[in-house]
Image (cartoon, rainbow, N blue to C red; front, side, top):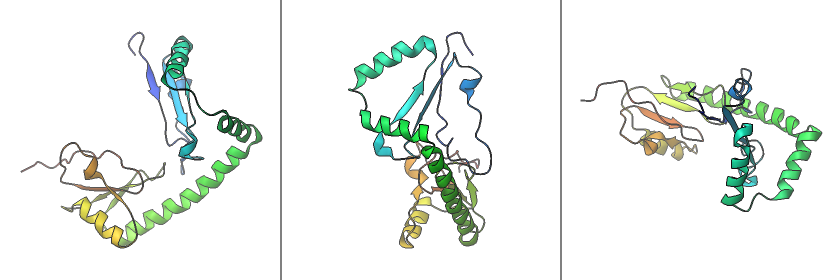
Length: 187
């Protein structure tokens, strides 16, 4: 790492890993070069707007000043409630409950994709609250999204989020991810 370099680490799926242990945080290895960021938006509620940043000591004063100058701060009551949930163990119990629930939903979705979309490949099933599905052949993901919506399932066509057109069809369960460019030659 270059002298004075800084990495911002945010493992946004850390709490939602199903089949393997969490990936060790880079901050544990390089605490003087890593700002570790996170939130409780997927664990409790996005509306709480509670997150954290563990900054290296040499950056803490600047981070506090920047936060102070950026807004008027966060509401105290949600922070106190979160602290109580953490110290009482209720947050950990909630996390275990959600992991089981989301693992069942993930398994049902993977099984449904295998049953109803033969040849499709599911990506990202090990963690998170979303799946990405790659479809074989030349199928427009917008047409797939429209057809699934007619059957009561809402998916996000990833082509809506591409900077340049792609020939492969991609769709996502709940949150879009950036598609990889097609390996096929255009022509």
